[in-house]
Image (cartoon, rainbow, N blue to C red):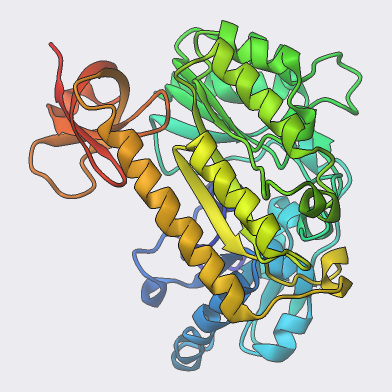
Length: 441
């Protein structure tokens, strides 16, 4: 790494996996003696960590990287790097479209970042996007954003090849980390004050499938539940096909595993689910929802919805709307179908006009917003357990913010000495996106 490079700025777009990748980049650079810059204008190195799950995210990236052109013109020694899923997907093509970029590196090349930066610059453009053998076992430092709650990768990549999804092409095939490495990492986090971990993977339910350890995901949860000092365990994302009875029972029986599950349904039409290559029917999905709610009546369920998938009829769409009304999720991530390179859905017949997809999405969002607010109001007068994360992000003086076991943001009055502790809060108001409450002493 060049000795003149002292300050870096990482700009992150995308999911929790991207956020944690950025934490690793920061950790690797900090270990090399660099420090975070307050803004891109103050940086010697700018990394844009990208998402390509939707076409809109890709468009946003090119808009953001375009804003850096003038910074490069003003400071030719500035190094601009692009990482993440768009880097993996487009590779050196980015250098042609944005020639002021110096370095492209993929998700599995973070450990090589110091060397890559050192050899990239004014006269040398670099693109390093090869999938790396053994990457899943690399123990990288991470400069984590939150001390109380942290992300921990347990696996990388995906083998599912849903017909709309680019993830297997940009993050590679499924690989699980060794359970002992995961446990050691979490033990160190707990020593530094972490009280909650969110386990990350494209499909955590299939964790351990290719390991020789005999440790699948339910067993991993059981081992983590025994760690002293760790208060809560969450995980994303769960593929419904691989949500086993053993895992549901482990969730219900392990006190540290939160009653909170993100279970992407995508559509309630069997015809669409088959076209998406999801591997389950809507009845299969509902049987698992029923078992979850039988064993954990207060479980908070969230989901993903895609509207306007190729060939989606009014009947298919209405089935999804009815599912939202019946299941009453706590929240959803909803999207218009977006063409992604290399996926099977790109060449499917029956692509819908943008205005139809937009109208369907607007209706889904409005419906879910109303359901979420109703669910939140129904919690008024109840008492919830909250892990205090810090001050109220809305800026309320003397107010704290934290998460309930169900993942709800709860704001209440209290002293900062409570950060990192579990407290009881009586909900006084259910709002559209959060709860307000009063500390129960």
